[in-house]
Length: 298
Image 1 (tube, rainbow, N blue to C red):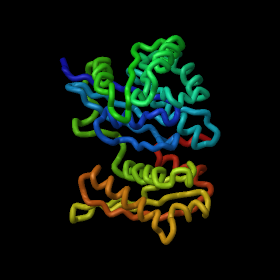
Image 2: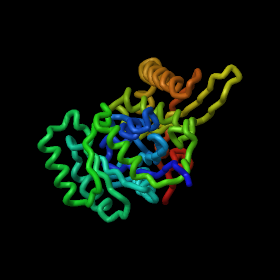
Image 3: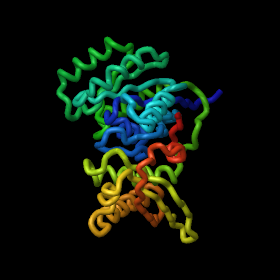
């Protein structure tokens, strides 16, 4: 008889509800990229949270929205796949922005799912109390939520109590991952995600959602450091100029920030080499989808 528990929790929500921030908070370190830009999470990323003798596997899904392009369709499909075979489905809602047009269809789909459903209202640090409670009651009438939690993914407020409750829900069984593993993403994929996060953070509105980061080389050097080569792909030449910046200043700044964070994350010295390529059809490239961990559907 095993005394360990292990289960899967799918984290769903509209784009930018704070899913990645919450997963990082539950795991206790960064496993998913966060950005003020909606739809930053593209593929399903798994964060592995430990609580006593319980392992909670958190599937951080891409935000679910009305898909228009092939890339969007693949992301939404990945989100719903992430919710399959879960022991619980956690719906994260931003009570400040709400994004009703994306939240309503999501509520309908979650309502019909067989898993135990948990509602988490985020941003308690900034939301007003009365509207927050009214929203909880309204959503609770639409979907049969087993529990409702009020948290701040950013400050961690309310997260320990929710983590305890998630751990209590998990079925008995052996752990699926080693104790020191915090994510299922390979270091190679994580490295591209960190660079992509810097792209978003440093270029904000200047660079639309039309960029990707491809891994090219990942070499462990004999001196214990790691050499990483990545390609930033954009759709238009004017976007390439934005990423490079005046005299290459912007790409240098992106590279420095990504390298610093990667060194801390990997616990070793990192040599990061970035170059920018224009390819107006990258979002129709099957290989690119596979690199992002998304399924190619024609």
